[in-house]
View 1 (cartoon, helix red, strand yellow):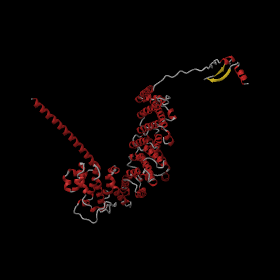
View 2 (cartoon, helix red, strand yellow):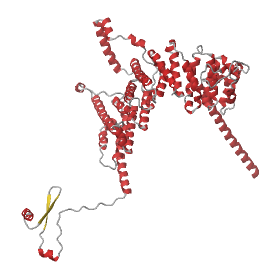
View 3 (cartoon, helix red, strand yellow):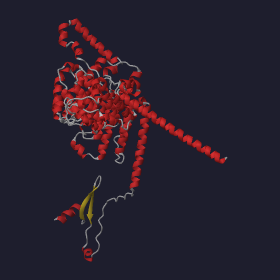
View 4 (cartoon, one colour):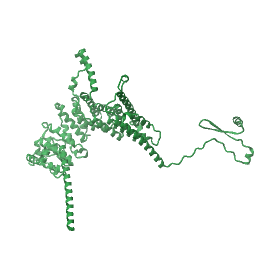
Length: 630
């Protein structure tokens, strides 16, 4: 039955084979019928006729040739991108259409140069937009404004700005696509090294444009893309964004961009349950806010209900027209509106303090405690009076935990005494626990972690002792003086000099500290350096400050001079010694700068002396040679 069906299908005695599928048709194949005689004789069977085209073998290419071809392609593309980029920067009004051509290069299909081509495009477009973007914010004209009659120059400018804004939007979308979902844990784990490098490049490009033009269009969109990346566990991305944010904080004069960034950071920190790097909170320290709106200015402004009660209908209409006129004048004015700036800064500080207080209450054991305390120390003069009591309670709880290092204790002490010397002067708060805690951690100044905090010591001791000299006991001053001198022998040049200038300020402010230099003074008890209570360590019974005698043999000349003059501590030497006058009048920073200049001058003179000596020796040798010749 099968043979019959096959014969009926082919129409002859041949045996049908499976067809071959070509691009557009099916090719039927068949095998001719075999004769019995040929089978018996064992003759060879005829070959199958197939209409199959045989492809030619590819030429062999070495790896060196492949790399050379790829390098040549990249060089050609780099030349094309560079020429178009230069043309756009030289005359953006006429050559802005070339941005479209650069955008077409983004969709390169050649796998050999696709990644390199995209990197070149991102870097080139970044430099282009950093150069051609204007300082002002472009406002897109409405349809009614476009239908109005306008001059030719106005139409050209409007067309140019619209095209520039459209291309800049496409550029930001490209960067956002490259960054992708960097915060997604699965994508971070599955991404290869090339993807991570390309993502970092996109972040750097976006931050560079944002730092250059932080108030341009789509700045809020850029903030919403960059700030959530601060929660990513990538140190390079984190450092890049934090550096950019700090630079924007320093350069921002209006305060609106800083306010938007601060609000986005606060949302990110809360969303991550405070599990972010301390570098994120340290960015707030770059803010330059020294003044905000006071409560008195807020009380002067009437609410809408009060206006409805106190003003007549005519007065309310006049007030409405006045507001519209002021709004138009503000838009046309070139100079900054001071009240608007103060309001933005007030909102910024309010958002920061809200986040600080939440961390102090809910996340005292997190890594964000140190930057929070540093921020409170910097902005302590801006804290509202209503928060003073709660803040001191939280400080007391934190000090009892005993998990703080010397930097945290210094920040807490600075914040507390800044409050007590300002608006909180009338508060009935005993600062004894702050004196005790700082006295306890003072020896840590000699460690590596404490040496970085020595620059804050003069300001803190000024708040604690100099400004409160009528409220400080003698035993407390003597104990701190003794401990500071004991710490100074373990410090190097500049840190030791800073500590000695603080001791000098204590000597000049509190005359009874001369007891520590009097060998004939007799008191009761014995000095106990192991006791952490400055009131009960009997510092007045300590022997003459032997540490000053040790410092007279210090390696630094300035430290030796300061120690000798502190030992003398007499008005006669203050009048006769020039260095003593310098030590008594100048601050530690001024003193260190002057000593550094003196060291440079001495090294310069020493170098000149060596040169003169070398010239003189050469002259002597020449004279000797001439004498031998004669």
